[in-house]
Image (cartoon, rainbow, N blue to C red; front, side, top):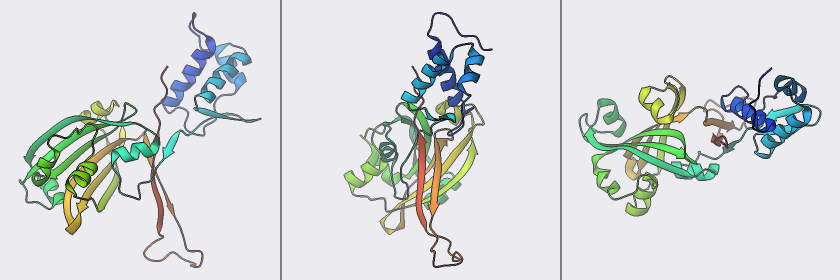
Length: 269
């Protein structure tokens, strides 16, 4: 039996406990929660109290209920498309989240060999490194490291990089469109620096997305490493097979959708 604290409504304590269990990943989307009778026994309360707690979570959009089956964790992640080229603000707007950033570094340095190769430069060439913590509704979602050839450095001067985006600055202010992107997606573990920025334990699994963005003439504009919190984003893809074909072609099936799915921040009362 789990004891409740005196002086605070019991149904609120039960809903807060369930909310915390979901936030910690103990109950995942579409997992079934303990039954009303199980929760009643755990907290030594009536079914009416348990139902009030579940109604609160249902009203907050955190669970859904099925007649005769029980209560289940709702998947609050919002889809938005990334088959198109998009920036962080566009991603967040599509997901219904308010985007903002904190600039952690904006410096000029010599390109390490790996960075130089990504940008098509000679090792040691001057580049600008921009580091930003990316937020959705004020909650850390991603940490970016972006490198640009020094040629583009003056274009960033005087801009609010906490609310503006590289796409908008380059495309709208300087008519340098981003026409193509090359992506690589892999798993990574958070080192101490990234973990500190994202407010997660060191070693936590992350989703690392590397991107090289190109303008006309195959000119490389920037190389970026974005570390997504794995509890805040996942990717879904959809392939379509031609029913007239008995086997997929050697080129593979065409990609119809490739979408990041963002989980909205848990409500904290």
